[in-house]
Image (cartoon, each protein chain N blue to C red):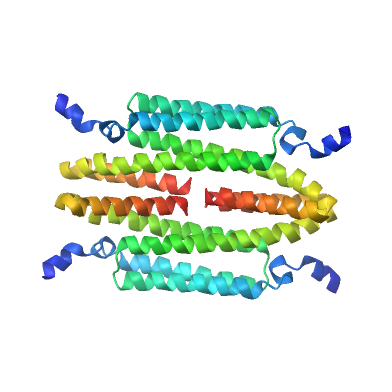
Length: 103
Length: 103
Length: 103
Length: 103
C-alpha cells in the first residue's frame, strides 16, 4: 500500500524540489503584487508591460521545470507499467505541452 | 503645470480603468497563491501545469489591454506632438510588442 | 487621385523594404522545402523540430518588422487624419498584435 | 542489421504518417509563396500579418504532431532500453519542448 503510494508520488516531491518550486512561486506572487503597486502608483504603461513579460517568463520556466520532471518520472513509470496507463499519461503530457506552446 | 501633468497621465488612469486592472491583477496574485497551495498539497503535475497556462493567459490579456490603451492614448498623443517624442514612443511600443510576442 | 494612392501606400513599400521582405520570405520558403526534404529523407524528429523553431522565429521577425512599419506609417497617418479612420486603424493594429502574441 | 535499423525508425515513418506530414509541409511552403505574392502585389500589412499568424499556427501544429509521435515512440523505446539512452532522449525532448514554448 505504502509502495503503491510511493509509486504515485509526484516527481517534484520525489526529487525534493518542493521547496524550490514554492520559493519560485512566492517570487511570482510578489511580482503580481508589484504589478498592482505599479498600477496603484500610476507608473508608466511600458514599464508595467516589461514586468508582465518578466513574470510570464518566470511562470514559463516553472512550467518547463515541472514538465521535465513529470516526463522523467510519472511518464517513465507509466511507460514501464505499460497498457492503458501508458496511453493515458502520454496523452495527458501531449495535451499539457500543447497548452504551454499555445499560451 | 496641471495641464502638463494631465497630458502625461497614463491611459489606464485617464480611462478610469485603474480599478479594473487592479481587480484582474489581484485575481492573478490569487492564482499564484493557488499554485503554491497545489505544490504544498502535492497535487498532480498536470493539474498544476493547467493552472499555469490559465495564469499565463490572464497575464497576456492584461498586457494586451494595457498595450491597446497605451497605443490609443500615449502613442497617439506623441504622434500629434511629433518630432523626437513620436520616434521615442513608437520605438518603445515596438520593443514592448516584441517582448510580448517572444515571451 | 495619385496623391490619394500615395497616401495609402503601404509602409514596407514606401520605405523601399519590399526587396528585403521578399528576400526573407524566400528564405522562409526554402526552410519549408528543407523541412520536406528532412521528412522525405527520414531524418531525426528532434532535428526537424529544431528547424521548425528556427522557421517560426524567422516568421516572427518578419511579422514584427512589418508591424513596426505599419505603426510608424499607416497608423501614424490615420492618427493625423483623425476620426473614424484613426479608430479603425488602431483597432486593426491591436487585433493583429493580439493574434501575434497568441500564435 | 535490418532489425537494428527498424528499431531506430522514426515514429512519423513507422506510423505511415510521412505522406501526411509532407502534405502539410507543402501547404506551409505554399503559404510562404503566398506571402511573397502579397508583398509583391503590395497588399495591406494587416492582411499579411494575418497570413503570417495562420502560417505560424500551421507550423506549430506540425511540431506538436511530430513531438507527440516522438514521445510515444522514440522516447518510449529509450525508456524501455533504460540507462544512458533514456537520459539522452528525455533531455533532448525537454530541450525541444522548451524551444517550442519559447518560439
